Length: 204
Image 1 (cartoon, rainbow, N blue to C red):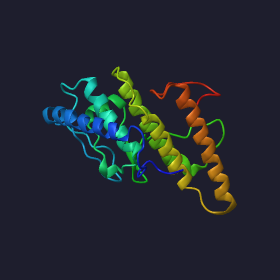
Image 2: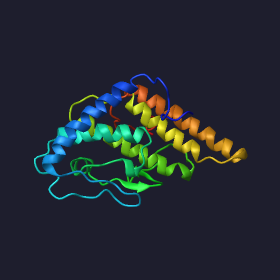
Image 3: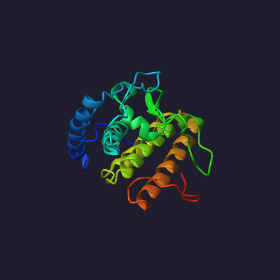
Image 4: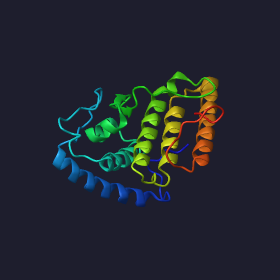
């Protein structure tokens, strides 16, 4: 599967980048007052800036979540992403760095069948992306069109990239295609909005 980076002419791409640019401007204004921007360095947890939550509404967290989710979907490395403390507070945890990317430290590959352990870092990054969508939804705003699909694609791309050569690699890639199908089905069923908790056979 082709990664999201470098896909020419993808529908809605310019719209999202424009929206993220506007969100960045708005978030910068909020952070300038609260002093809550916290850069992420590889191999470390998201740093905590004092007084970040003071006077910051849920809307600031949702704005930050939309920006960070877009970066996660685009494959940005941890050094390229800034996670403000207002977002950390809303998430309820600090994302950590694994294999160079931000992940949910408690994330996992939830599947009714066993998946290769090599998929785990990609699953944890995907879990973070889904949590960011929930932050957006909690503020009452719609999840940007295509963003959930892009997060799903990123998971499949990274998972497939861990598969080796030979017959073992072929089996691994077959499992990755199964993951892609399950994600596509769930995302379509839930209208590409914020993920909601469900039970087997729809859980993933």
